[in-house]
Amino acid sequence: CTNNYDKEIVLSRNNIEPEKVFVMYNSPDEDILTINQSEKKRYGLEGKYIITFEGWLLERRGVHTVIEAIEKVKDQIPVVFVILGDGPYLGALMDIVEKKNLSDYILFRGWVDFKTLSENISISDVCIIPFLDTDVNRRGVPNKLFEYIIHEKPVLSSNLKGIASTFSDREITFFKPGNADHLADQILWCYHNPEQLEAKTIAAKQRYYTEYTWEKMEQELYRCYDSLIGSV
Image 1 (cartoon, rainbow, N blue to C red):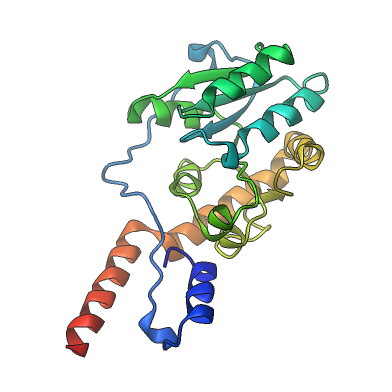
Image 2: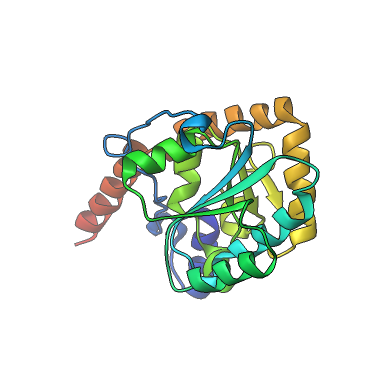
């Protein structure tokens, strides 16, 4: 399973002993994911409060909710939403931005290489996971969550059971899935409470390195293999 909530579902639907179900999170290999620092001015974003999303663009990933929230806060804080990625919902998102006249606040960067991705995360003030509340999203814990935390960035996330079983609200900031009003409120909270946000970021990193690293998942995978060999 990919997280403890996923394990709960598997156990509820199958007659199986809990110790035979292993949890391995989709953690990044830090030998591959290197950290590359940059500066906002290099990307023409000096003085901006940058919120970043990276990934495949599908409707169920809720990026449109972020656009709606940006519209609500743009006159209160110097916010910019950077979208790194591509996908079948890209055209619809671009249409929303055009119709709302938000092109100064929403930046589509497309797919980028690992170095550029890391640089964009490094200049972000907050990174976001805006997934909608669907069966698939509810069970998942995306790799990008760990990537953001490794970069020591605050995380804004939809309050979904898989993610909420992995990190608490003492470590990341949650909002109601698909609710642009609540997300707007949480964006403003992040902007106006940098010290509290920093405390969450530190706590999230500490938990990641205690429980979820690639090396720990590797060990868990070997335990799984050993259990299978022992049952033959």
